[in-house]
Length: 140
Image 1 (cartoon, rainbow, N blue to C red):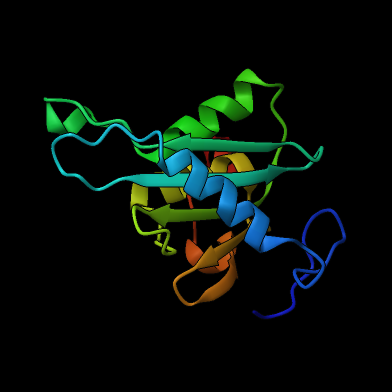
Image 2 (spheres, rainbow, N blue to C red):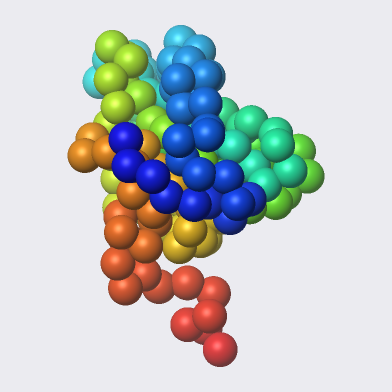
């Protein structure tokens, strides 16, 4: 993985990505995916050191299913807020996957351009994952 500095001043080399991935895998085990059988788990580190997780939750009305990142962001705010600094998402086999477009927007809103994500092509900041993003500053 490449070396980048995150918002806490740590380099990505210093961060324990495997432990964060293990948290995502554990979250994935709680996914509710009776329709697609596509289980997803996500985990992120918060700027105060907490780890937040989420899993996907499907619904018979397919369009209202919740992605794992939705649960993760809800847990972020439920447990005190803050900013996401590191993020990873896995499928049912524990393989790294990319967040969908809606979830990339959620990650931008709650981590900003410097959030470091473990992606299918290595470590990238949200600025690289979602270039020219729309955010709160665009609402002024």
